Image (cartoon, rainbow, N blue to C red; front, side):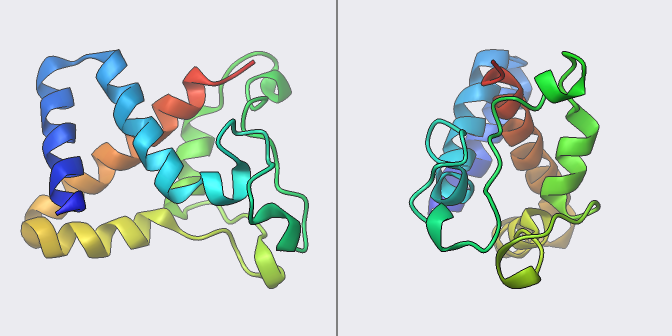
Length: 133
């Protein structure tokens, strides 16, 4: 049910083209998938961060570390798994593209799942762009 609501929300955002709607959906994705490690504020201080064997990075200074320009494509590729990031126990950060694909396929079938996955990932990256300091 939750996935259906997220999918419906993404469809509405796509139809309206509203950046604000993208950020709302992106924040929802962030709170479900990222805040546990990176913290609700995105500063790397989530409740799970202390048990990781690496420092959990702040996600609020990605633009500052990139000469003031938010690294949109690189961020998207890290989240969807095309660019690996070392995480807990020497493994990589969860590959959200794969996890989203599994739930989206159950919701929309093979052909509809790609649009849902891309929408969720893009909403998340737009949200991360909005929290830059």
